[in-house]
Length: 220
Image (cartoon, rainbow, N blue to C red):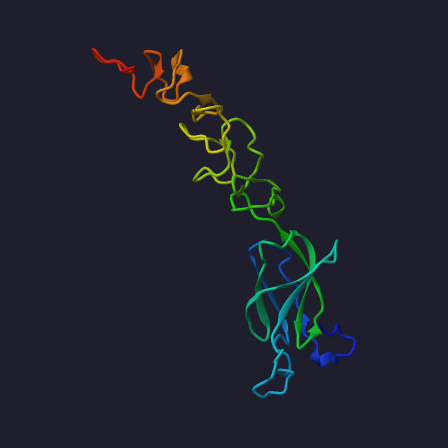
């Protein structure tokens, strides 16, 4: 697919300058150099031509040798920008630019995972290597009534809000109390106020209020 430089004249070979050494998944890789649009389109120039005078950003993983071309979003004769896709496994790479089928010099690049709080489906795409509740998380959040996607605190293990149990930590109809315990919902039987989600055990039932007025009951 490309000439690695064995037959190209020196003045044809694109050059790649030193780059920012670390780029995250879903980040933009910006590169600078020369001859990113080649010397010509390297084609016939007629209506059926297939010009190649544009840069392809080519990566090879250092440890496995896996190779990938990144989608270039914009370029000029001396610059190019490419998106690091979500399916690219973080790790050490070497990056080149290919123009007119000619390979530039290579530069080292470290692709890092998504930061905590970012949406994820695979743990190995996260810097923390932990994906919980659809976000990259700082911890496993494996305690009772813990979640990692609490609004405003994405990426942190937080108590599940009171009255909810989205991860099914509690048995039966029980719900979380907001401080890491499973308790009974309103309407369930109880023996004391600590059994109930709202802290009111009245007439043997978890009640929505204290029912402290005259002639009030919670078991009708």
